[in-house]
Amino acid sequence: MKFSGLQLYALAFLIFLYGPILLLPVFAFNDSTVVAFPLKGFTTQWFQNVWNDSDLWQAVRNSLFVALSASVIATMFGIFAARASTRYRFPAKGGIMGLILLPMVLPDMIVAMALLVVLLALNVQLSLLTVILGHVLICTPFAVAILSSAFQSLDQSLEEAAYDLGEGAISTFYLVILPLVTPGIISAFLISFTISLDEFVISNFLGSKDKLLSVYIFGQLRFPKSVPTIMALGAVLVALSVALLALAEYFRRRGIARTGLKNTGGFL
Amino acid sequence: MAEAKQGRFLGSEAAYGLGLVSPTAIYAIMLLAAPLGFILIASFLTDGYLSIIPKFQLCNYFGECASYKVVDGALVETQKYLGAWSDPRLFSVMVRSLVVSLLVTVATVALAYPMAYYISFHVAPARKGIWLFLITIPFWTSYVIWVFMWNAILGFSGVINSVLIGIGLIDTPLNMTFNIQAMVITLAHSFAPFAILPIYVALEKIDRSLLEAGQDLGESRFLTFLRVTLPLSMAGVVAAVLIVFIPTIGDYVTPKLVGGAKFPMIANAIEVLMLKGDNKPLGSAIAVSAMLIVGLMSVLFLFLNRRYLRGPK
Image (tube, each protein chain N blue to C red):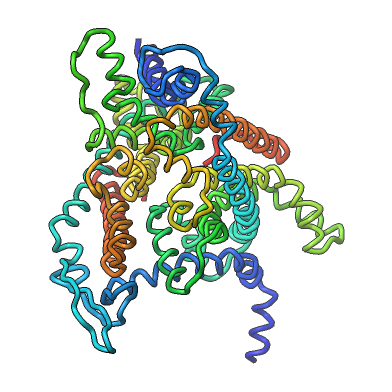
């Protein structure tokens, strides 16, 4: 009895969680500009609008450029910090790692405004570059978290074996450690990429006239007429996000299988 | 001797570690610590026209302040304003942010606990991964679109109202957006995955034989839960509370889209003061106050947990 009650609860929770996502495709194909039941009929008009909107494509290109740059840099920073924190003891370790991980718990608005005030004071022109600076800051903690667990699950005796067989520190890193954590690196990259793609506050305040996708979407929400188009766009984005995440999860599991450990949980 | 010491340091573990962490650390110091320090200092300075005048004062926090303009080398007062904690409007924004994020935290964690419990105790081990995956997906999809969807669902001519009218339950649409409830629902939804994961991890760590022992010693299932499972999972609950509370108090998109009012929450107030209002010292004071509130609440919660709930040390 208790069991089935919990099961019902779990089901209700999933419906609450997925309700909005499931409504996206429903209204994306609905032949009406008003988001309401009853449905009016089937149309692919909104997807065509998405396809033909040149501003939107420009925003997509900007977003991809920013997300790619930010996630590559964040992943590299993540490798440095995660390797240092899992393998070595050094002074002020807690403080340094705390600072690096701080954006995870700091409101984006405060990060964005603090950076903005300084950039304006230094007379830096806002551009996609300044957005990348901000995105690297908020993606790095997630990359560090994922890579730390990848580095942690390394068996240190493998490294020692390489040293015993005459390899140096650098060749050991390339030949032994890097291949073992590659799945972690890929999943850190994909997660950073997703975070950057979805980020709004920093993109909005550190950005210039070159809009990012999330900023473009936010701007369109003021116009009731473009609501169904945004729904169609949302449906496409959700599908892409799910595909990316499935890929990240696949690599994470392969990484776990490679280091011979048991799968103990999700991304975080 | 200094040389020998340096030589020992260069070859040491500490040097390797510091060297390896330095690119990331330097980036964080330059682009995070320095700007945050700048904001902290700015909050004690004087507001000028499109600038900050380096004159120390406390009135951005308490009391009455004034903005100045430089005319022919002299400071001319342009406008008076009240400090962050003295202005009733700004004070109420801070209180509202605190109330909303506390409500969101309670709702989210209370809803998340049974879900985490279900996955940990009732889902077969082989299928736990897929459940966790299902729960984390919504978190990784576009946040702006989520908030917007809730707006469409709760809106005046939105999904819920059209369904309720359609089945004849109500005649006039209900007003469900642009208030605190709408913010709470939307935020509770977006932070649900954050709350489930730490609780789940804590539940997974519980030695199942302890539960059997509890029942063997004559406790009912419910009492076993209350006296064994719940206390042992408190670490996860604390983590969940902090993970939900901290970002919600500074959320910008949800209050902007479904919150109503000119600036419903702290983040919106910071935006208005810093950009449209061109009052960077006051905006900084609010930002610093927000960080203080978050820090104090976190410490308070950790302390309460240790003191009364016999949580982890």
